[in-house]
Amino acid sequence: MAEELKLETKCYDANEYGYLYGLNQKIPDKEFEKVKPYMRDFRRKDFVDGIIKVTGRPEGYRCLEKDVSKVEEILGIENTLAKRQEKIKKALADPIAKVNLKDNAYNWLNTLFKKTGTHPKQNLSRLALHSTKIYDPDDSFKNGSKDGEGVLFIYTPHGMWYVINNCSENSDTSLNNVESDDGGAIGYRLMYDDTVDTLIRIYTEENEYSGERLY
Image (cartoon, rainbow, N blue to C red; front, side, top):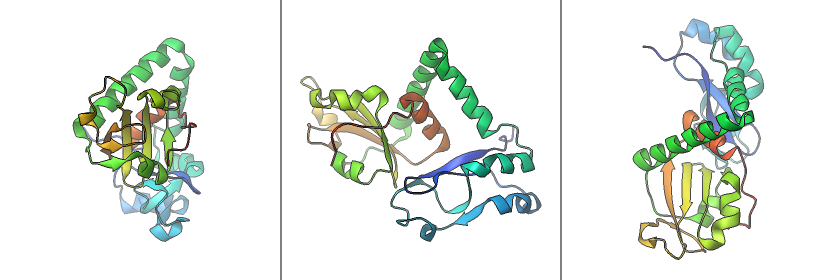
């Protein structure tokens, strides 16, 4: 069964554009010509600092969030961004649905990062320094880092990191691949993906890290 045509996030630019959207599949040139006026063929030079503050794939035909509905209307896209966002918003507003949605998002993230992510050596301050944004679910890292607890989701130009603090008294620190001032963490990296980004935003409720400086 062919995948349903939709606009998905292709990258996040921390400086100027926010999220940029692109089609999830190639469409006939004749159709593409109709939406081209609302899209722009982005290149590295179009971003303030090149792409050092961009997570994802910025190069190619992308549209701004304000133009998404126009592109969807022209192409007759039914699975619209607004519908998807409304569905999430509705679930987060219902206490029982919210728990289920967040639990499911967390389970998916755990599986995706641990089963398909890479596990390179890194330094937390370096990740933070080069980040485009950092989510801290329920302020877990802000409140727990001194006790070796908490998790972060860090967006960098090279992908998205899931960092699990692992330096409490009973932690097996031999598992750590991310150095930190507190004693280290376990980190997994995935390349930017629309689905993973959505799951992170659901699970963290887009709560940005607001603790002490990490670098």
